[in-house]
Amino acid sequence: MQMINDRSPGNDAHGDGGGLERYRAPALDKGLDILELLSEQKEGLTRTEITKELGRNASEIYRMLERLVARRYVMRSTGGDRYTLSLKLFALAHRHPPMSRLITEALPPMQRFADAAEQSCHLAIYDHGNLLVIAQVDGPGPWGVSVRLGSRIGLADTASGRVMLAFQASDQRAHMLAEHRRVKGEAPLDGEALAQAGQTIRGDGFLCSDSRQAYGVVDISVPIVGPAGHAIAALTCPYMRRIDAHAAPSVDAALERLRATAATLSMSRIDVN
Image (spheres, helix red, strand yellow):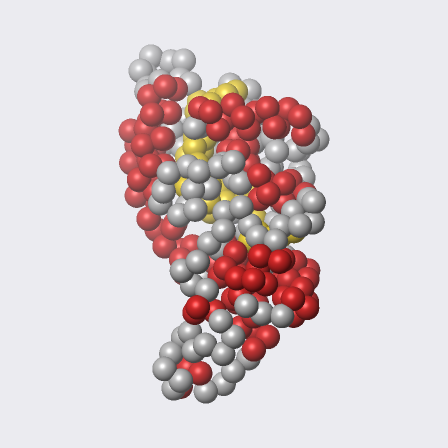
C-alpha cells in the first residue's frame, strides 16, 4: 500500500524531526495509523491484515482496536473478523467548519431547485441512529410542504433515511441499523421490506414514492455522494401537487432537477456493495 512506509514504527511521517516531532505520543500514533489505514479500505481489514500492514505488535494492535471499537470510531463486522471505519469521524466533522462549507455550497443550488420546481427541499445527514436536517429551502409559492431545519427524522420510514441506507456499504448499513433510534411517530422497522426497498432504490438511483408521513405528498429523494462513493447526505423534496389553475412543474420534472442538483454537490459516483 502507498502509505505503509509512512506509518512504519519510528518513521518520521509528519515532519523533519523538528518542532512537530518534539513531543511524541506512541499510543495516539497507533490509533491514528489504524484510522488512516482503514480509511483507504472500502471492504475493511482483519486484525491480522492491520498488524501486517502497520508492522506492529499484534497485542498492541488488538488493544488499540478494542478501544477504537468501544469509542465507536471503528466497527467490527457481524462475524467479528473485519474492521471498518464508522461514521463517527464524519459526525465529528459536522461540528467543524467543513460542515458549514457543505451547507454553504448546498444552499444556492437548493434554492435554484426550489425556484424552478416550485417545491421545497431539505438536506439531511445521518447522526446517531436517525437523520438530522441541516439545510432547508422553501418553494416560491404560497403553498408547500417543508421540514423544519434541525428536525430529527426517521431512518427507516422516511425517504431521506431509506436513501441514506441504500447508498452505503453493507457493513456501514448494518451499523446504522444497529444504532437505529426511532423518532416520534416512526413506524416499527421491517428489515425485510427495508432491504427490498434498498435494492430498488439502488437500482433506480433515487426514491420517488408516496410519503409515509403525510397524505397527498410524494417524497423525492436522491443521495449526495462523498469521495468513497457512499451517501454522505440525502437531498429530498416533499412534492405537493397543485390542483388549482396554476401549471406547476410535474413530479418527473422535479425529480430530474433534484438529481441534477445532487450531481453538482456529489464528489464521486455511487459505489455500494
